[in-house]
Amino acid sequence: MSIANSSIARTDVEQVVRAVLSRQLGGAAPATSPIPQPASGKPNPLKVNISARHCHLTEEHVEILFGKGRTLTPMKWLYQDGYYAAEETVAIVGPRRRMLPEVRVLGPCRGASQVELAFTDAISLGLDLPVKISGDTKGTPGCLIVGPAGSLELHEGVIRAMRHVHMSPADMLAHGVKDKDLMNLRIESPSCTTVLENVSVRGGDDKIKLEVHLDTDEGNAVNLTNATNVELQTINDSSCGCHT
Image (cartoon, rainbow, N blue to C red; front, side, top):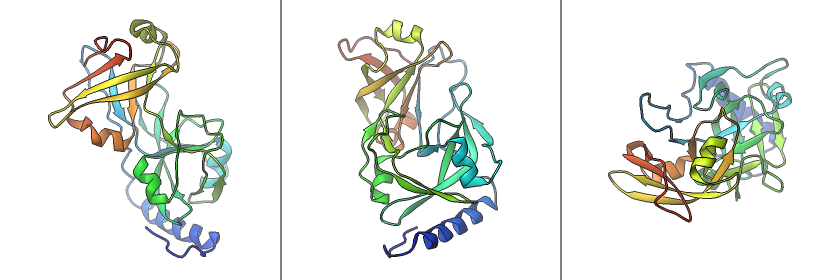
């Protein structure tokens, strides 16, 4: 949807957005973000998943957007234990008065709200987004977030998430890397074989599963859905990797 008149008041924008959300939420539950679930029985634990556009919210912002006393409702559990795609969605409105009407909220709540979009999303909204590690939002653009019960102006926190790999201490030891190091990801698919450089290592605790996150644009570009093999490579030794 495009709101062409840049002079339209914010209240008018919110009214239009809420009408769209009401129509969507009044029917069947919206489809979940296309984040592939792990297949069981594979010998190697490396997963490469697409993390579609989404947002993280504080508890305070959840109540502003969805109503006093509201909490997030898990709809689909993600690959990392304890994380989920919520039933709740919001609309993201950019400076061009264009919007993305159904952006999934991921839980649990965080200490700061953040929106993660792909490059084409940013172009559509008229935002020049930096590529950042999740949580590193200082000085980034903001947006208007509209929910069924209210809206809020996010002054910063809209990013393109840097491609990254979640690793436990054992994974980092096995690959000879540490938190914030960079790796390469080789993806073989019928139409193309591609190496994505500068995959940032996100170190975690022993509960973290070995998983690479790409955004929608990156996943489509490498034909991830039809990939036959994926391999993590250290930058200094391209022969070292983890296959599936």
